[in-house]
Structures are given as structure tokens and as C-alpha cells.
Length: 510
Image 1 (cartoon, rainbow, N blue to C red):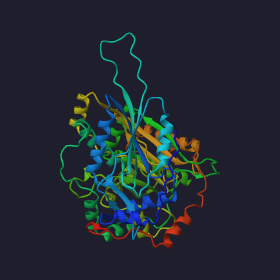
Image 2 (tube, rainbow, N blue to C red):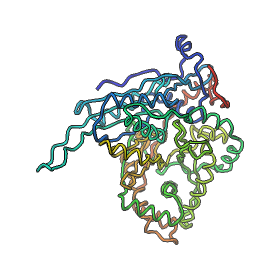
Image 3 (cartoon, rainbow, N blue to C red):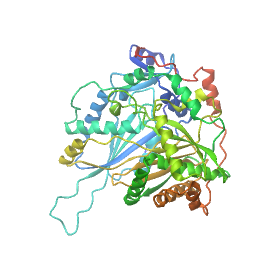
């Protein structure tokens, strides 16, 4: 396989020709979410940070020309897919009239799938050019005919489809919306039907400009404790002597996930609060105390619980991370912890348009970020039933859709998503320089053990009772944090780029 390209991706000065080419194009200011992703991407080039991938199996006939035309039609429709970044005179998004859909198809056996995933992630994107998304197709070897032959037709051909995108302009929710649009375009012969006005980055920026940051700032001042909480579900340990990003995976079966869901429903808490509670328990365990302790971790919000028309179909970088802190007392009933986490999440939902960078600035916390781990139950839109029926009628089926999650910016992140069969897939994505592979697998095993145990608990079960399930288990270890990234932050400070400019209510002509 060819080596990944090495395009420069930093906040460089545009050439005179680039500046002239972008003259008079509409622009919008970057949001805080975009700014956070951009800075971290520039500080960790060629590492796959903020690059996410969604993959699925395509069963049925696949016409490459029609496939490409359909994605091109989607690019023509969606403003964000024709956007790029510029840094002069201040960070902003440039809206182009045209961009080319990037589609490549590999024949069966020509490339290894895992190698393709890694190379495509490390290739990244040149964010100064439009189109923050690309498609890669890998045909699979034909399946052998059944023996003895059945009366039915041969199994349909299969192709693995990989959609790679950058978080500075898209999130996983957006990727699934785009897949639905593509499906409509493919069925229509390669051209997306309709032409109605769709909400886009400009609408979102206008909405943000109308929000009162004072109320959000006051909320986060009250929500975050003055004392430093327990940040990682691991004890201090030696250097791992490993590098890169790792991923430990596990799964609750359909029966186990259904049982857990029903148990949570009887306690009037969502599945996300159950995951938050398990992570809070593991953080408390790492605190090494028998008494109460305040723990903290980041949670994800889709950003689509806002009062903007048709926001659920808006394509853009709206997913955000919000800090969750809670006091865990072993003497309290487990139900009390669950209810507290549920109420915290509901309170935070009113401010899911805020980014971690804003909260950090408002609360003036020391360190590069507020908290050091992430818990995410990925929410994605449900595909329209009529669309799947039409694809099926055309002999096309999308199977085993999977979002990989971007390489974590934290030492460890717990990612979860529901499978099509009702199972619950779990992954501990980790920085191998901080948490080694063995400890990541151990941590995930502890999560799974607690999740399987919870449906057996009673109303009177205490936090201490649940923690006792892990009493004989080792606590994972975490290596000291390296002193990196400071030089880049200082470099940005010298250029007065400590945050994006205030968002104006309308687009401008740059």
C-alpha cells in the first residue's frame, strides 16, 4: 500500500494565490468545538487524532460510477462538505461552491482491511481544502456456493465501505445522516432528489450568536467542584513502554443488554446513566478510600437537543464533550447515585451547545483539560424505514455498521453503542503510553462485570455492595503523563490565538 500523504496541516499563512482564490467567498467564524479539535489536531499531526471512521458491508450490486455520482450529489447539497479552514485574519470556515467527492475502490485481495483502516486514518485531511470526508471500497472474495446447491440464487456480492472524516467539520451523527442521503441519491440513479433548503453551518452559527453565555458560565461555575476530583480509574504505575492508540473490545449479548436496559427502565434512568455510574464506581475504587470521594469524567452530547428547526438532520461538528462530576459515597444506595447522575445529565443538556474549551476558560482550571477520561454512549439517528425498504427491494443491504470512534485525546475513553441485534458493544480506547494494553483490557473487563451484575441488585443495594464484586481484582495502572504539547500552546499564545473570535450573527464575504 502506498504511504500516507504528508500534507502540511498547521495554521500556515496562505500563499497569495490561495488568498486570491478564496476572495469573496462566504465565510463563518469557527465554533469553539471546531477550535478545540483544530488545535489538538495541529499539535498531534499524523497520529489520527480527531479522525473517525464508519464502516459497513454492502450486500448487493454496486455500480462504482453511480456510487461516486451519488456521493457527489450529496457533496453538492451539503455546505459543510464544501468547506475548509483559513487562519487569516482570524480562524474561519470558508464555504466553497464546489468540491469533489473522494471515492476509491480496491479489488478483492489487493489490500488488507486493517492496514487500510490505519493508513487512511493516519493520512488525515488537509483542512485548508474542502471535502473533510472520503469513501473507500474494498470488494470481498466471492462466497463459495452452498453444497448441495440450493434453489435460491447465489449470495449477493459483498463490499466493505469505509467512510473517513474529520471531527472539525463532521461528527458521527452527521455521517449517518449523510449515509441516508447517499442511499436516496443512489436509488435515484446518482442524483439526490429534491432541492429544499437545509439547515447548515450558517444557521447553527446564527443560533449560537443568539445564546446567552452568562447563564452557561454561571451554570458551569456551580456545577464543577473547587477541589480536584479523582480523574482516572487507575492507580499510578510505571511507564508502559508502549505507544500509539490501543483498543480493547467486549460485548454484552442481546439477552444481557436487554436485561440491563429493562433494569435501568424500572429505576427510571437511561442507559447512559448506567454507564456513567459504572465509570464513577471504577474512579472511586482507584481513589483507594472507604469513604466518600468526588470523581469526574467527560460525557458526550450530540449537540442536537437545541431549539433549531430540523437540527436532527443538520450536518456539522455539533457533538461536544461536557464535564460530569459526582460525589460517590459507598454508604449510599446505588439508586441514589443513578438518580444523581441522571439529574446532572438533564441539567447539563440545557448547555450542550457549549464546548470544553469554553468551560475551561470560564472556570480557569489549571491543566490542558478539565478531566482525563470520557464515557460515550454514541447516539445516531435511526435510518428512515422506507429508505431501507427501498434499498432492500433493489437487492441492497447495509450490514454491521460500525463507528470506530476517533483516537482518544484522553488517557482512556469508554465507548459504547447498541448493535443492530440489540447487543451492547463496548470499547476502551486508550493512549498506550499512559495505559498499556493489559490494563486497558482489565479495565474493560471490570466494566463488563459490573454491567452484568447490576440487574441482580436490589433497591437496598449500596455502592459498597457493588464495589465488593471487584474486591479480589487488581486495579489497573496508569503511567505518568509526559510533558508534551506545552510548546505548541505557547506558540499559539504568541500569535494571540487563545480562542476563536466571537461568533457573529451572519455570514461574511471574505
